[in-house]
Length: 256
Ligand code: PEP
Image 1 (cartoon, rainbow, N blue to C red):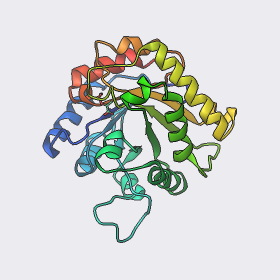
Image 2 (cartoon, rainbow, N blue to C red):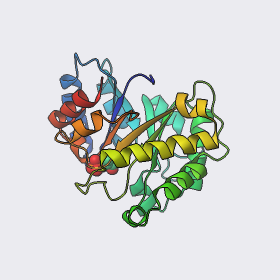
Image 3 (tube, rainbow, N blue to C red):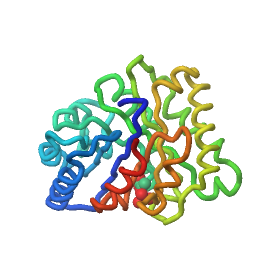
Image 4 (cartoon, rainbow, N blue to C red):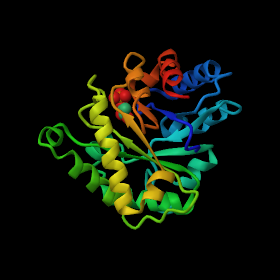
């Protein structure tokens, strides 16, 4: 991961079947051939990772997973390890997405275990999701919520010189809702994240080892507003990443 380059990450969630994932990956591979800006990552579901990984050989598009377990092997029914993800070509992995926090009750102590294991056992770049609920924003608790989520997620995590973590700020009220954060509020959140990371580690680590990206209802129509936000290193995109034209337009506008 290059600090100078911005990144755009597609989260396909459970929106596509296996064949549909392969077809969309191929479409994107073709569309992005000749594209040379920034980082482009797609995160299909677990079932599709291996074949999509093969499809992406020779493409600038990188592969990411949507989740990972905190142990490498053992009696953990239904789970997938970081070494398996690397085996099929993943370079990135989303952890603690709000849908998992909501539907599967994942909390930040569990996310902390995933993060520690990832940094210790793999070269995968974690995409750590944080974000407040609507009520917290309305009651002025954004700073409290985000700094606490980061504190719990990063507690006891040791950062090496070459460790890279992407913090994805995804306010719950913006995901899939059509509502996006205002640029001035995003600036505020950026400051909160940098300050929290500096408190947990130090200024140097906050600056060198972390990228900060936004996710929540971004599409080709509103992406230009995000391209101008200083200190924002990219985007995590759900719905609008399921259409190759749309995703290409967004990548073209946000990446430099
Ligand atoms: C997401 O769920 O990570 C996301 C950003 O979704 P959407 O773009 O659909 O709001």
